[in-house]
Image 1 (cartoon, rainbow, N blue to C red):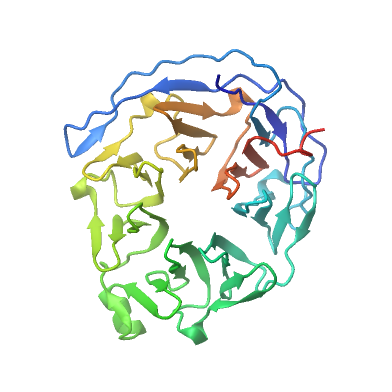
Image 2: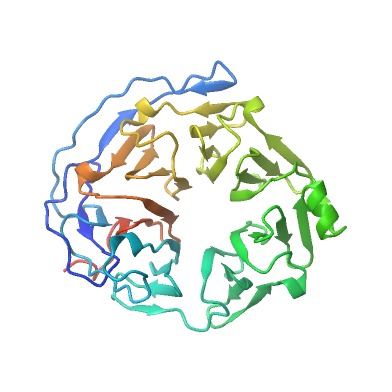
Length: 386
C-alpha cells in the first residue's frame, strides 16, 4: 500500500505557523511508456489521473511544508535571512543534508545548521569565508565547500583551505563544486569559462582557446568559446557529465571530452541540471523540457504525461537512492518512480512559489526550498512531531 503525503509548516522566518489543514489531497499519478523511433523522441503515452483514498495516520510519509497544513515541525529561526518578515527576502537554499538529517543552508551572511529533530539551529562557526554557494562530500568523508574565498574543506572538526589562487586555482571565488567517486573535485570560479579538476595531486584546467591564451599555457583548450558550466553528475561507469549555459552537454571519461548539442537531439544548448537515476538513465533539466538519455537517444518527455506541468522547462533534477527521479518546477515538485509520475503542489497543501533548491540528503530525505520556506519529504524522525 502506497503512503499518502501529509503536510506541515517549516517556515523560514521567525514567525507564527501558517494556517492549519488536513494535509490536502494525495498526489496524482500517471503511468508512462516511451517511444524511441527517432533521434529526438517525445514520450507519447496517455495520462490517467487517480486520487488515492486517505490512509491511517500510522506510517504516513510526511512533508514539512512551506505555507499550509499541520505543524508537527517547529519552524527554524531565520536570524541571518535578509528582509525580516518580507517573504521575498526569505531566500535560503539548502546546500547539503548530512547522514544525521542535519540541514546546511545558506543565509544572507552565513552558513547555518538546523536539526529538525532536536530543533538546534546555529550559524556554522570556523568558516574561512561565510558565503557558501555549494557543498559536496568526498569519498574520504571530507566536506568540500565553494566560497567567495576559494574552496574550503571540513574534516568534521575544522575548516581548512582546499583550493585557492595561491595553490593554482584560476579565480578567487568558487561557484559550483562537484566531487567524483574517485575523489576528484571539480569547480567553477568567477573566471567563468574555466573548469578545474583536482585529483589530490594535480590541478587540471579546461577552457577554450582564447581563455587559454589569456590565462596561461596550463589551461587545456578543449571547449568552444563562451562555454560556461552550471551542473554536473557522474554516470555509473565513472564518466562525468556537465551541463552548460548555451553550449550543450559534455561528457568526460577521464581521457576524452565529447560534446552533445541540438544536432544530437537536445531541445536546446542550455542544460541547467544533470542527474542519474540508479538504473543508469541520464536526466537533463534543459531549456525546452525534461530530457531522458539511456545511451543512444535523447528523449524529450511530453509534459502531458507528467500531468501537472508548470512551465516550459524544469528548475532542477535530482535522483534519490530508491531510484526515484525528482523534478523541481516553479510551483511544485514531481517524482518519477516505477513508471509513475506524481506531483505535489498547491492542491496538495504545498503552497510553493519561486522554488530555489532541490536537495537529496545523505539520509535519503528530499528537501525543497522556496522563497517562503522549506519542504521535507520522508519519514519524519522521532521528535519532529508533537
